Length: 479
Image (cartoon, rainbow, N blue to C red):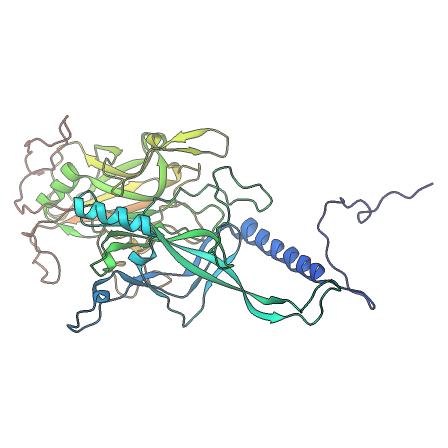
């Protein structure tokens, strides 16, 4: 009679094997290599299964200012940049570490391969690229053998003792391309799964180095070989934070949160331009179209009736200018096996007022976007918690209030919390016609891309006409 198999006896024969040690054991180089590979595989599995992949902290891209002086050095006007210290995990589960004190500096134009530089120069000279090309900066895990030594013992059939590399050095390398990267999958890849059919093999550098898949650090606009970079050209919001499924957040809005606008400025913003909201990932249009997802409220103030809350009629639609860098139409594979075309998703929306309700001096316009009901391309709710009211306008400062920079001290603020609570997005503006112009801010008479400039009072916000424009209808002042 045989005993029932125990858990140890019932272990599958294909399970991982771990090296054991005992006195008198003969070890070979193959045994020790397998031991390293076994623990490296466990670390990669741990990183991807529990943490996902993306940037953990740091790794901010900053322009290097051109040195002062008049020396005719062409490198003075080259697009130089630097990357701060930090840590990330790539799609293979390998750790990317830029140590403290290491500040890699590179010419972004020289990081492009020769073919891309030639095509970019042709586009710039012909005017097809406008004021420059868009470049995507990535960081890669890199390994290379180092410390060549001569073996002490050789096989009986060998002649002179051969040389071999004693160590493998792990590091990172930076690369750039003008090709738009593929969108991230909803879930991190499984280390045990076979590579996708369209996935490229691990490239080598021709000198023994092995380079892993790239992790996007920044998108740089208007890059030219003869012009230095500015902070406005670098967009780090395209980075993926370290997570299994990063929460979709609000990255920018087209109005100053808590700002003071004149009646005419608010009229242009609400009725003509619309309140523009941009997301970090595509969201499903069907979830935005449901009634009650977005509301505009008017809280009366100033002269006459005060404290009354009225809901303004509004219309939410997809922003037609959401792809400034030339996105292409493609499909996405969802977790349930269905595909979703980009025509069914959007990364930016506009909310316009459609009624003729008058805006008085002292009124407050309150926007509520119920982001828990808005689902992104992966089916997860948008985290719209407007932390500190610091989501910036395009081209605005990273934070409106001093001392409230992002946790890493660089880059723009977004909505959301570390816990990913998927809170409601709220923001407001005030109507103030008698305010004094601030010399440190944009003048009211100076054109603005986001807010109108006419300071006349006594008119109501213009609703959009059928053709997308506005009519000239006005209403009387509220008693």
